[in-house]
Length: 106
Image (cartoon, rainbow, N blue to C red; front, side):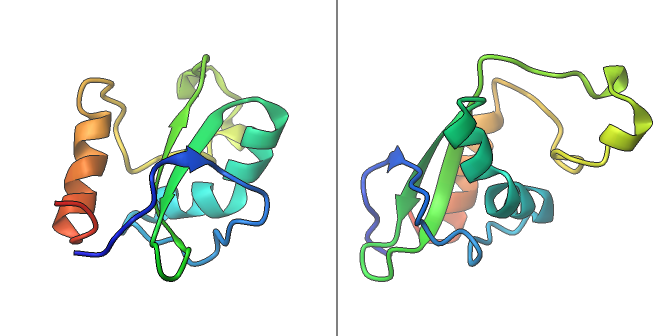
């Protein structure tokens, strides 16, 4: 099992391009939108990193708002987590299960 850092806020110089959790929509959001949303105050992104490589191995995003996809114009529906159904009771459990399955946390 890899040793990871304690959760901390995302930093602008964190290397996000190598993040891969196995779900393309989550990878893309982390790589393309995480810093912008965090810096703009739209959400708070916390990361855990590999102790040796310092690469991000997991993240969680908290937001005070939610936009229902059906209320967006069709041209704006392309962003987001299309392949991850929203279930607030299972969201963190699923992510932690993915981390455990990959051997990052026990």
